[in-house]
Figure (tube, rainbow, N blue to C red):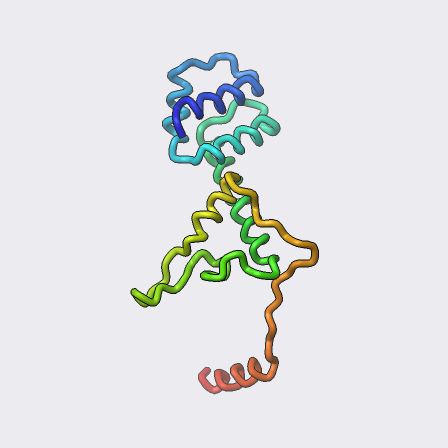
Amino acid sequence: MTLQEFGNVFGALAVQLHKTDVDAPTIRLYFEALKDVELEFVTMAAQRLAGTAEWFPKTSEWRETARRIEAERTTELRERLRKRAEPLCLACGDTGWEFDPDVNAVRRCDCAALRRLEVLGRRPMPALTEGSTRTVAVDVETVAKALASTAGMR
């Protein structure tokens, strides 16, 4: 996020909330406090605050709103991925982690970058088709045998 990009978001929110005493140092101070937050979340937070805030937000309130939006969008993405009949990524099954046999360890899957773009809103969230739900087949006898074999371990 650049100061210019942030200034545009700040200015729009200032107009919407009738903050009339804005000056360049104030914008710079807000930018410094929020520059580690992605522009998309700063913008989404400003849009939400424009509709809910009675006063211009403090930087801590703006940051908290941005973090809440990020958490909401992450939860929404996870729910969408869980509800799909088939995973989008066959390498990791939509977990974001895949096994790397070369080093005998797990690593972040390449799809994790795409999922982040979806949370940011730079890509659309995965679509769900009507009635798509992932089902897991369970063999009741196998589960019962497994439970019985571990019962003696207690």
